[in-house]
Length: 251
Image (tube, rainbow, N blue to C red; front, side):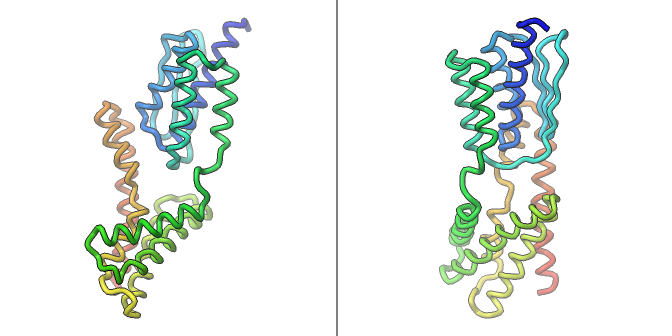
């Protein structure tokens, strides 16, 4: 294998790693494709082809080089990683990084833990639940019940997802628990408006970024990715609604 072929395969590895990190961290598919092709062009490969779906990346640089495929199994939301990969991409475009340096930096980004520890995420979800309740014209007397229900519901979402890797099942149980806690607070006269407490508490579970990315992908012409993300968002919303509906069917 010649040095040029080795260089080409190294560039492919950098492009695939960058795309993998971005896609797993919640980036739009068109942004992933654009970043991968820009990195390849910066390293002298002008005729690259990238096809990205929410569950996989297909990348090719020429007819003489085997097409590479990366399977994406798990996806989350970590926009800090997306921003860091974009930063590395800009450095590559400016000629500030070699192939090896770029790969090493991307590896460090990939191995980084979440931007915030779990307890901070739970605290943020709790406070957001109370604030959403006020935004939806709830009373301040229901602020604390919404904070507690939202925090426990978000905690259960994380814990159940670690036990059972079925995303929609975890969201169904989390919304069910939120509904039961809300009813419990109302029965004990700790809360007053059941609907407002539930609405505020389930808001941290709503797939807002997924819906936004689905619309942006559709507008960018990525119909497969946009429709699949929209379907995932619909199923997530259905799971949340079903959990709440189960509580209302018995209360």
